[in-house]
Amino acid sequence: MTKRIKLTTWLVVLCALMLVLAVINLNTGQMSISPSQIMNLIIGKGSYDSQLVIFDFRLPRITVTLVVGFALAIAGNVLQSTTQNPMADTSFLGINSGAGIAVMLFMALVKNQDANLFLLPTMALGGALLSTVLVFAFSYKKDTGITPNRLLLTGVALAGLYSSIMVLLTLKLSPENYQFVMNWLAGSIWGTSWEYIIMLLPWFIICTVFIFSKNRTLDTFNLGDDVAQSLGVNLKRERIVLIGAAVILAGVSVSISGGIGFIGLITPNLARRVIGFKHSQQLVFSGVLGSFFLLAADTVGKLISTTSEIPVGILVAIIGAPYFVYILMRTK
View 1: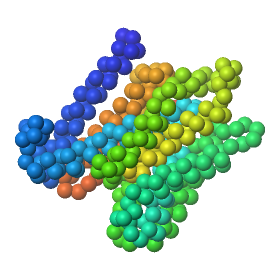
View 2 (view 1 turned 135 degrees about the vertical axis):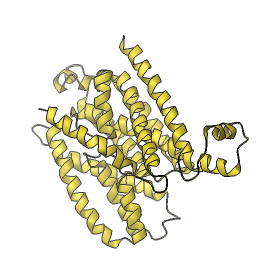
View 3 (view 1 turned 90 degrees about the horizontal axis):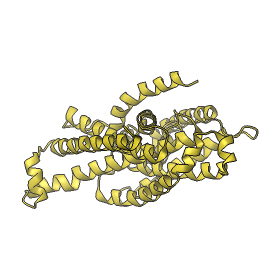
View 4 (view 1 turned 30 degrees about the horizontal axis):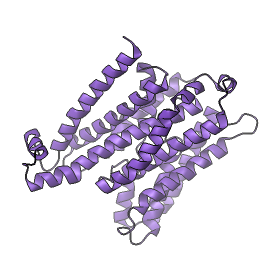
């Protein structure tokens, strides 16, 4: 079986499974809506209550999980390729923590939060970008540049610092704001409205198209820095622009979905095992795999409890944390 046929087969299977998960997800909640009722809604014969629940609440949430899962997987793929570190992920490079501090500052300092709600994702993106700049600045050494191990250790150290700052910031939060922040940090998908999706899509499209256009450049990183430079690749420039695109993609995603980690860690590693190292195929597969994982986690969370929300980030971490340990044990 050729790699292209293998990729196509996997994509068809994953898309079919996501369709099944989407139907289950639409039907799960305090108000049950059967597949036949969903079909009636599609042809315009459903009730107003069903239409409101499906099109204003559940369908936007599913759309967010699909887009965010794809985006985080692509971002993780780029970070791992450019740093040549299979453990690189948005959560370990300070992106999630930086966005989390920005969210807490917003909740603590902005008084009229309802009127400035769309400022929250903007601040989260700014926090993610600033945090990433600090991680790479502290990881840089004049003689050796940025090494994968130093990058990971710096990200973990700064994440610990951010956690301490977050604890201090909680003292300024009201009980309601504290609950929102804790849910956000746990990966509770909160931006489930079409307005937030419209805000996310331009960033998603621009960054994703740019990253896919650089698939050959990403392939050269697999050959090592010396070989890549001999092929005429400007490593410093390409690393900066690719990591910048990945950080923007991840920052915008977590600003709407909350602090979801491990998607960008798991999916690129699985994609390389199944499809190989060619990024024209690996990016597509890891992106679809990310959408599948996040939708599956959200659906399982709703099936476990239909009355209270289980943060998606917790369910993803249950799978991601053991896989991270596995990768760590295999890394030299």
